[in-house]
Length: 193
Image (cartoon, rainbow, N blue to C red; front, side, top):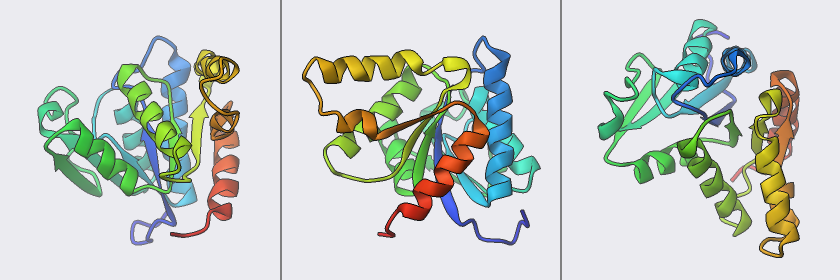
């Protein structure tokens, strides 16, 4: 991607501030960063330079992609706030961080991660369930990491606590090529706000 080309879309990525135990998680993050640059999609993420966050951002940058990072002041040291991004926003707190990331994206992709990643995922899923947005949400299911989560969502539905539309709101994709295709289709189908 040429550095002077405006991105066609901005994709929010939620993922771990650690690399996780499986080397496939890091490989997928690197592949995703390269994919974003190739597709001319801007990476919107938590601005950390550690874990999968750092991997996806560095890969996007190395391939010439645009990066938009958002980090709260209290995590600048802990997550090693990445200051060489195309754009960096420093917020007062986590709530503001999540809002800025969401408002500046056209779709959401969730890579493997822990409690923070789950918090971010469930917040945007809940917002979608109650009609606050219609942005595509995809789980990158590297080595079936998110399979138990989708089973939990199915369990919530079968238990009568959600409509089947909740499960339909989440795309489960096995790898980055499948994700790229799914994003292309979903983004083309969205009606601009």
